[in-house]
Image (cartoon, rainbow, N blue to C red; front, top):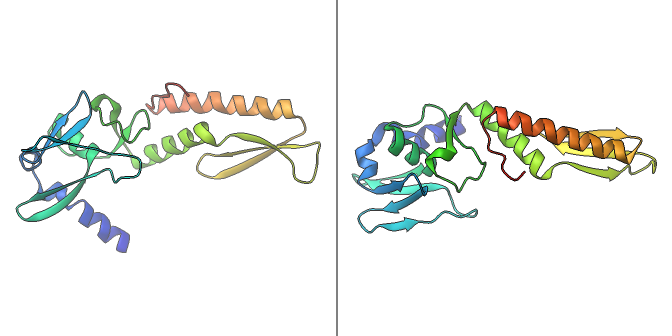
Amino acid sequence: LKLLLKLEVNLSYKKDLSIQDIQSKILYDPIEGAFFRLPTMNKIIFTESTSLLVAIKVRGKRYRIPAHNIAWLYEYGAYPDKVVMHRDMNKLNFKIDNLKQVTSTHLIRATNMYKCLKSGLRVKSHPTDVHKFIVEYNDGKPKKKIFQDYCVAYAYIEFLKIHIKRDLQKLGVSIGAL
């Protein structure tokens, strides 16, 4: 119940703030994916360790709005109906061509597969049987598969990578250098 109330409070900006309210406080450049405070034109800097929310004060009330929702509002004139996914999975890339509306299930699936592909596939020795190898990966749920041969275990990882990349492309994720 607390989570639902918090979600409603966090989304109150959608009913309280018009595009004109936001445009009077924030300028968005869709090509660079950059945000600037008005009237000073100070660039808003986002980093991995900072919140990706833009704080603004309108009619005496403070709001914290996800930056990708401001980008969407600027480009399409309305708040997104669904969640916004960063196609390249880089949450700091707010270029409009990198943003896509998806369902929350779609976003969770794409995020888990991307994480699995990026860092979660590995082969290690079995702790009790030196003739076996374990492939560990996490695509939302930790998984293990045991193999008798290292080469087969490694081939299985390559097989997973190919299929995960294909599935990510189907979900609209730009896999670039992966």
